[in-house]
Image (cartoon, rainbow, N blue to C red; front, side, top):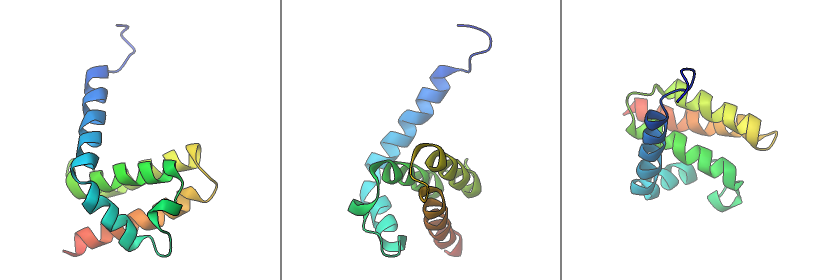
Length: 105
């Protein structure tokens, strides 16, 4: 491995943690998305947006090591780069509403 490469085991380990977390908490995550999406049914969202949202909601609700603002920002940036023109603002608003419910508890 070259000196300038990041530790791939750590990156893959965290990716595995996210995937397993989304699978284990799928119903809760989708309930939150459905409740706070304001007029958008999950099945109407682009597949990529849904995947980004599920990962970010898992980080917000189940990973205290990642600040909510970081999870939201990373999701927004992924959506801006990879999805539709409107996805970034939609994801930002939806994740912000979900994060606010967590802090209100």
